Image (cartoon, rainbow, N blue to C red):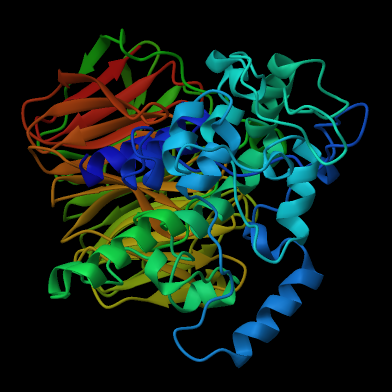
Length: 601
């Protein structure tokens, strides 16, 4: 499977399009674990920590195991003893002298279903009755206290299709009698489980719970990710015997056949750490409850696959560089390389205002919410304040030392943020009514970059600013301290579009390198990257549905929840340079090199 496919699956999981169970199966497959090999059998985590109560409370965090720790580090008293032994040990050091997954451990759980495999493994005999999988709570207690027992679980514990058939002695095999005289038969389940089906059902509910969804990435880091080996594994108390790790022993260069065979047997029987998939922290899963915590939960766009052009407005003499809608969706402002600002009625598709604001091209425009004021950015380095009601230019200020390339606004506090080819971003404090802009009174901060600013975006909470440059650099800034929060892996050249998701957890960008990228802002990693066949010039996003404008006139419609390209529309002749949409997605406006403004519904 390709890296791009891995990115798609990871993003689908993060967005809730696939279950925790299916994602863990996928990761095991990616790490070369298979149901057809007991030495590389899929590994699943212990999730529940309560196996004694009469009722299982899945709403309480106390019912769950700490997924940020390996199974051997859950009991701090045992961990301390293991670390003392580790400190006194000569290299190669290890904390755990046993593994979390090995053929013997897999068959320990599955012997009732696959007794023949256990007989093969143990030379025709079953294990001693007292050492068999007799009671779930006893095994849970043992993996927390025994100095040599650190086994995790197998997928069968969470597989609803199997109905827990591995827990009952359905084949009626004589496994013998325990020391107290009881016959080994079915596995003794916790009091909260009515039967084996109910047991597996409750474990699966726990696996898909909000608590596990919010913490599963920590366990992924330990088993498949950056805490699997090296210094991070030491910090996480996640160090196993060196032969457990892929590539630690070069069997091909062992000349002695007996020694080589001995090593192979050790590796197979002792247990193997899965192939490492992730080298960076794994992104956290998005929970539905996150958006509910926002003061004004956004309305997701309706299905746009059936949207059509309802109006087409001509009037500009050169390429339209930027369009913006008013907050109520009634007006749309457009600026062009022909130096003019035009105000259109988006409902009637008629022009209400047209004025030449500069002697040079206009690059960008914003409408100040709650007012009739428009601010435009010009190639002559100026910011131009225009009042729609009076039709007058209120002010013209030299805002930068080179082309003003992009503009965005915030609501609380009220700011205008301008980006320029002079390699700076400037933040201007807005006082209403906005009659003027002057560096002395209104300039709040200046953020320096190494290259020309080509794109800006601000998150919904007005706390973060993302800046993109002509060199492809992508930087995340705090609007509280005006300091860098993160330098994100960017593009190869011009970044043309940036948008935050509505919940502020992700960022999407597009650029002249023809690529579309989705970032997780918590870890700073790229969740998804897709290279298209044309330069990507602009975008609009509601967190799930993404519209991207191409350099050859294609309008791409993506569902980023399922990570599927839904539709490609030939929308314009020439590059689409700007897209904007109402909050509910009922009205879309596109514009570009063909001098036309198109309204979609």
